[in-house]
Every structure is written in C-alpha cells, then in structure tokens.
Length: 361
Image 1 (cartoon, rainbow, N blue to C red):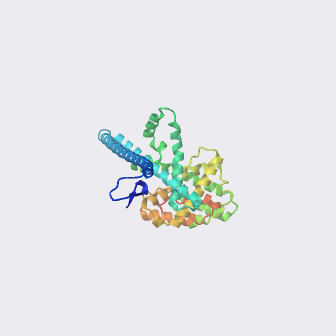
Image 2: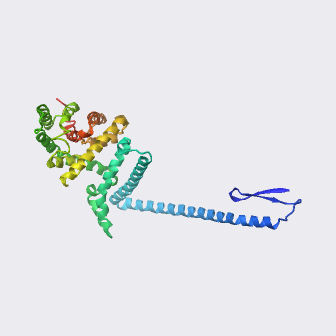
C-alpha cells in the first residue's frame, strides 16, 4: 500500500510499504527522512525561542508600564507642579516624534512623486514650514546640552525660560495662549514704525498719483481706520520696483519688518533681506494652497493659526470674523505676483493694525 506523510514547511514524502501492517523501511528512505527532519527540528526550536522572547518582551513592557503609572501617580500626589511639567515634556516628545514622522512621509512623497514644495497641499506645506522653524529654534538648546552633565542645567533653564527655549510642542495649553499674546505684542510694537517708513519711502516715488494714494492710506491706518483690499491692491505698481521693492528697502525699514514675520533683526542687512524674501514668498505659496483648499475646510484652530501667521491676533474675534478677515486677505494675496511680495509683507501691517477696531470710512 502507499502511505503519504506530509512534514513541516509543506514538504511531503511517499513511503512505499509492502504488505499489510509492515514496519520495514529501506535504509535509503530512512536516511532521507532523517536528513529532512533536522532542519525541521531547528526551525521548530527557533520558532519556540522567538515565541518565548515575545512573551518575555510583553511581560517586561507590561511591568515597565505599571512602574511608570505608579511613578506618575506618586508625582501627581506629592509634586503636582512638577507632574504638570513632566507630563508636558512627555507629551511634547510624543508630538515632536509624530511631527517628525509626518514630515518624513511628506518628504518621501515629494521624492517618489516628484512634487515641488509649492505644489503641496496646504496642510503639508504648513507642516513643513512649522517643523523647520521649530528645529531652528531648538538647535541652540541642543548645543547647550552637549557637554557632560549639562542636561541638568538645560532642564533648569527650560523651566525658567520656557518661551525663549522651548518649542510649542513642549508648552502647556495655557502657555501657548499666553506666549502667542506676548509674541504678537512684540510684533505689533513695530507696526507704527513700518507705517512711518512706508510713508517715507513712498515719498520718493515718481508717480505723483500713487504717491498721494499711499500717503493717504498710511495716514488712514495711523488714525485707526481699517482699509479694504482694493485700496491696497491699487498701489501694487509701487511695490514691484524702487523704492518699495523688497530688494530696495532700506536696512532700517527691513529691521522693523523682520519682527512682523517673527524673524530676528539682529543680523547683517543682506541676510535680513534674504530671509524676508524667502519667508514672504513662502507665505504667498501658502496662500495659494489655502485658496485651493478653501477656508470652509479649516477648523477653528486652523483659522486662528492662519490669521496669526499673517499678522492678526484673532483670539478676541468670532469664527465669522476670522473667516471674513482671512477671505479678504486671500482676495488680495492670490492676485499678487512673486515680484510684488513686498506689498504682501506690508499688508500684514496694513490689514492687521486696526482690525476690528474701526470700520472703513
């Protein structure tokens, strides 16, 4: 009779046995079976060891989680203030790694699909922009922590100066709200100086009609009146050449414009000009991507952040006011050329200085 024996890995052997109930197997067949069984037993042992390691790993992970939960409970009961700091840092690292993974996926998609930055969807472009700025801010802190035992000093500094040293992922919600107010107040302190220098620069233009319109617009904003986009757009011819093109602005003018974009003004003038151009062009590309997406797709927090990026602190505004202001901004921005980005940069002051204090008149 014929008996079919199937072994590990889907292999099979046919053993031909002669006679009913015989237990005689020829030596050739036995040797073949014995040789085959060795790797099967080895695989079985490896499989068993792998399962054992997984079980040990799960047990260690479970115990570590239990110890960590007890430690957090102890901190929460005995040192509540330190627990808030500890929890914020823990969550901050989670958010930072999450952002890093998202940026990595965006970069991989750009490479595999041959996509340029300006062609990315709005949220991807905004994620890259924010992550790059966070990394730049975090570099000094990393450099300080390199020497041995310096991490203790860094921890103290981060506790005392969270706004100056930490990136937003490591701020508490209360700190995020407070720090945005502080940053905007620093930015808004330069709005008056920007308007004054805009008037001075505009007085050097050869077109008398545009010169008068610019002087009237700046005076109106200085009196507390909020202008409309059409008034600003009518002056676009002044900002694509001298004296208001972004490459022709005076060093003093650029130093007051830098804080409007949250950029430092403590750099050589040629570096300030380069950074103003690149960041304003990035904002123009971001506006075009946002226009494609549509404002109705943004959540309330995204609307608030979009207004804040463009010069307006919208915490006191309603959802409709934020959407209305951002809609007017996009109507202006999306009609500008890349050669007119100086007008976009100055519009951050013109459209934000008085909104919503006064109506246009």
